[in-house]
Image (cartoon, rainbow, N blue to C red):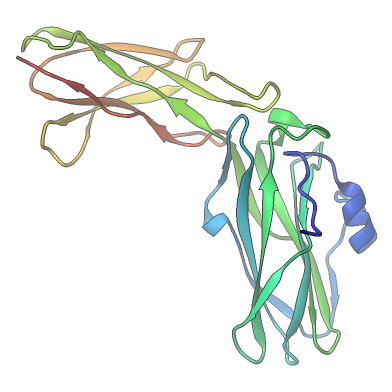
Length: 259
């Protein structure tokens, strides 16, 4: 059974850091001994971690380190969130693979669970998280980094599109509706994302790519509505570029038969 803990998306865990490095998550300091170095840290393949309203999301963290005597282990990896909550998730079951006599890459898994039963921080946990880690060498050199790297945690977005009427005569007006919503970690639901800019795109039947048609602003409830002139058989969709707090999303294309 895994010895590590999967805390609430954003459940407080300062006591874990206090045990490991003698301080709270907010107060922990960098430290080390010897000539050991952390060479590279990669979280989720370098992409933001996107979390929906209900499903737990697990992702990999890799730490590459070097020392003259070789790397013995990575004791833990720990991610903690923005002020003021300093929410935390943790893994102390790490697998290390030797790259050379000096260097190893150690990999662990962190999990965000928006439906854990305790320790909610909710929507305020969106933003920049810090990745802490402790690595030791065979000659007992060690290195701790409170912020070995940073990464983004974003709320998942959803987007729909529907063009009508179908079929439609060439030259007539098409109305394209839809809705932009995003995960709300306070309620574990998806709620409309108000006043955001969304791009309507069109792809002619048998064409390979979509082209931008116009920009539409979502209503106070996240609803979208615009009109276009029907020209040929094809697909209409909406695309949202994302924000600092919310991931990018593209709706499924809706086919329109133009006669």
